[in-house]
Amino acid sequence: MRAEGVWVAFEPGNWVLEDVSFSVPQGSIAAVIGPNGSGKTTLLKVLLGFVAPQRGRVRVLGGTPRQARRDVAYVPQRFTFDKSFPITVMEFLRFSHPECPKEKIVRYVSHLGMGAMLDSKLGSLSGGQLQRVLIERAMLGDPKVLFLDEPASGIDIGGEQTFYELVMHLHKEHGSTVIMVSHELDVVANYSNLVLCLNRTLVCQGRPEQALSPETLRELYGKDAALYHHRDR
Amino acid sequence: MTMELLEMARLPFMQRALAAGVAIGLILPFLGVFVTLRRMSFFGDGIAHATMAGVAIGLIAGVSPFITALAVGVLFGAGVYLLERRTSISTDALIGVLFTGGLALGIVLISQRRGYQPELMSFLFGSILSISALDLGIILGFSAVIVTVLVLLLRQLTLLALDKESARLYGVRAEPLDFFFYELLCVTIVLGVKLLGIILVSALLIIPPTIAKLLSPSFKALIGVSVLAGELFIILGLLLSYLLDLPAGPSIILVGVAVFLLVAARHMAFRGL
Figure 1 (cartoon, chains in turn green, purple):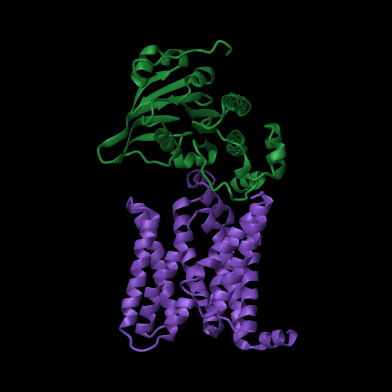
Figure 2: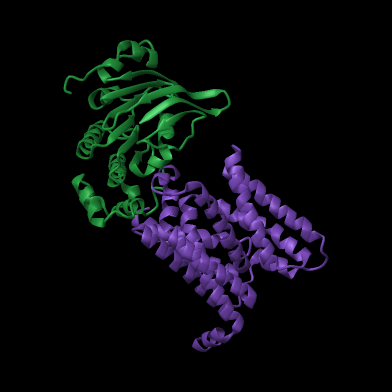
């Protein structure tokens, strides 16, 4: 995946992304970090082909983002829908992957410990359960690239750890490239092998131990920012 | 009673009313599932009221008001779609402007004609019992196409209604489908206007899926219950209207409201409220 000199503005002259260039090798787990309003979600939308940059070029799996859509999956930050609507987990997954055999859906869902939930209504699931279903939906298509936009927001701390362990498990099993936007610097340090620091422009990129330096964090988040490691991790 | 019902079934105008009613009772509640899922109830009301301009144009030009109302409905859908995307005005404000505009234009145009306007009254309050053979043909033809399209696009429309952005990753061409959905909704509403009237038509779009939501364990059941409820209201409403000599359109809607109240009461009792 490669971005070359990407510029994006939603209003004339008000650039959300300025001259962003980077490349992510296949099989990486890349984390995009940055403060609120730094353009992280916009960058993800450019890579997904939902937003067209005014300048610059993006290549995903050797083609344009639109051409790559068949091979990518996406777990959004918020999946907002009318929770009173009676669509079951099974119906939701089958609508998303009509070509996928029912047995495969049952196998995937059971594998992730959600077998008993197949006939539950999507709107009755907890935040953590819904995120699992969204991950399952993403992985059912065996994607080559998985995009996660702050996927653990709205999940409690225990659920968050389980969620990322699940993502890592799927990454190892399928060899997918993972691009995740995250506010959680400890998650980034623990799970990613490439960090892209964004504050409208690309402030840094590299391995977490290089990129998450005190200087970079101060530049991104202000003078008091630092990374503290939990002892039990 | 049985004799009366047999007599009713033999009347040609009742046969046409039943046939048109069954067709509309299928497509309005089916489409209503997506309308309620997308929280677009006001859109249905807006289209219905805006078609007043189309009815007036038809009456003045001496062509079928049904055809001109269809044309205005299609223009209304395109107008809302374009303005929604090219401006930052909210959808409900846009619909409010266009619907009052259409209604006002219709009243101004109608005021230029002298005397009582039976056609106007029939569009305002519906005229299911005075459906002509031509109207029935139009309603049945359009309904067959609309239901086929809904079945074929069921997956795409559901994903689009749940989350437009991620739907694109699952092969849904979101923008063209959105436009098509608006137009489908406009045509369906205008077909319903002929039967139930500008003022009441959106009830058959909204009440059946609302009841079905309270009763259904799955999306498949939701569509089934919604369509069954729509058909039940039409048939029971027509029966009541014939037996008690009541206006047909309002009878159909009152049956729907009564069923809704019963189901809502059962639902509240179940939840201990």
